[in-house]
Length: 347
Image 1 (cartoon, rainbow, N blue to C red):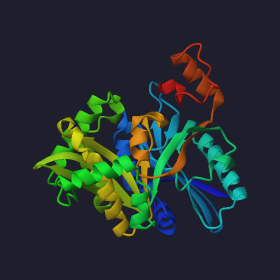
Image 2 (spheres, rainbow, N blue to C red):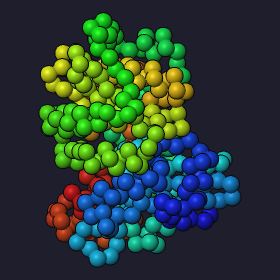
Image 3 (tube, helix red, strand yellow):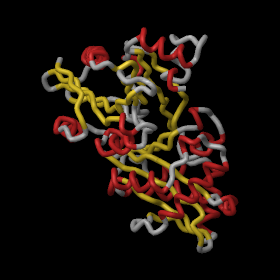
Image 4 (cartoon, rainbow, N blue to C red):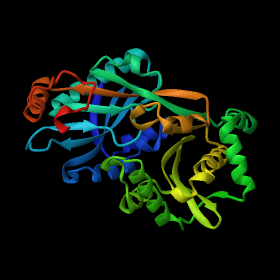
């Protein structure tokens, strides 16, 4: 088995993406954008590990980051979202197990201390049981919409309370539409930041105008802005991505003054139909905060009865060094417990 770590300009990376279904999180441009937003961007490199055997291959997108306070050694992490590995050819369970083992060995040879991977709830839904290295942690369920269902079935699968409020919003003359010219880009940023502040989101989720600029540059026509007009005011706005028939509900914000109009429900209802008409197959709404069954999860669950679990994969590649780094930062904490914050030395 041949294993290599390639950069974002690699033709091999592009060739795998051209051959298999993938999401925006697997794109070299998305990895490069994500790496540029790391705490130490000068020490963060967008990479993909490719394991190949004949006509079979596995591709794992990662950001290789220098470890803070250390002159040598790195760790590897998935970008924000749901990247996970991709498989080309007849990748049976035997190949998958050997590919994972080979990738870990190759990362070890490249002085990488730990690996943190976010698995894709749709593309990797049968993968968790095949991972032999490290620990797989389940974080709860995500809400998925089957866009191949009929429009009537999609509406029937929508919770009655959601249906009533969507109908009321439409009767009131509220309008959701795709802002193809990005006229309301600044309004989206204001709504999103205000919403995150209102719900007490951590600083990691405070994406501003610079993030949106970088995201638009990285994704181009794969990124869409939907807005909801209520009485002449943009009351809600959201970012949605599409790639290989997979739609992601990326970010959104709502004006608190229009909360009673339920503009986000109208927005998701509209986007669901719009993306279906464009021939997409599935729409991923995500889950609750941190995977919890909270009010956010309950809101999303009103649009579909389908669920998929979300997993992360954690591997300590160099146990001795991982323990030393972790205990130096958090004395007395068990470095062998991989189910909490990972990697521990970055907490």
